[in-house]
Length: 189
Length: 191
Image (cartoon, rainbow over all chains, first blue to last red; front, side, top):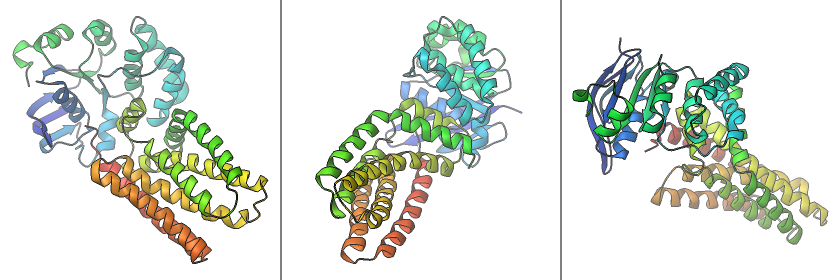
């Protein structure tokens, strides 16, 4: 059973529209999608983790439909937004405790996990590292990266080895730099 | 609702607005000393403070908090209750500061004024929250509703002299305001 199944999924609000997109992502799979604009990339990333609902077509995360079971979808999929967080190193413990509380994860376990992840991402700036670490606190099965920084590709991909991974990009070159494992012919949405 | 995420959201929202809350409380102390008598002063000032506290919850002001809350496995109504409580606490603290300052200046009707002002302030804040997640005309309309709700509460208490009528009106209207906010949050698309 695919972890993420998109069938002719579209999103339309006013002038902004994207799709149709069809995609199957199994547990452990990695895929990249190249979209025409940053807005489209942001929308597709949010569609893929159930933060926004498709206007037409279908999106299933696990067995769940974000239109009616968004809470279950959000337990399975985590989004790492493109925008850096406005956080500093001394916000780390507070941020981890906050995320642990929202996902109802035991605080000491979350702090231990986050600490070990931060060690592995030692070279990454806090503004980019914290959202990624925060996304993993809830133990998702699918991680969606919205236009990730190519400069941190090795660190991020190493950290996300055991997760299903979908990343959105705005150019083939960005996607190829970030995710050389992706097949070129399947890059463009 | 589960207590832990509820407390975390409220605490994070209050922490993010700590500077503004401190400033509002200081202003309330000052205005409370300058205009200690009657209901018009505390209701008008504290309702405006409540509306400002509610509008500070608009999407985009605290992007990291918005993102975490939207991504978290919470129902719209759970999120709404937690997000509604933070500005209500800020507004209630403002009202307490105002009434406390008025008390030091010899205002002796505090026992009656306190429930009237607190209920009106909470109602105004909750109605204004519905404006915070909307744009354009709907936002303006909800802001007008919020001011009208404060005026109606004042009219019931100060003109119609119906304390229980005012409390009942505020309770019923606040209930519908929270429900409306929850439904709007559940339908909200962060695009």
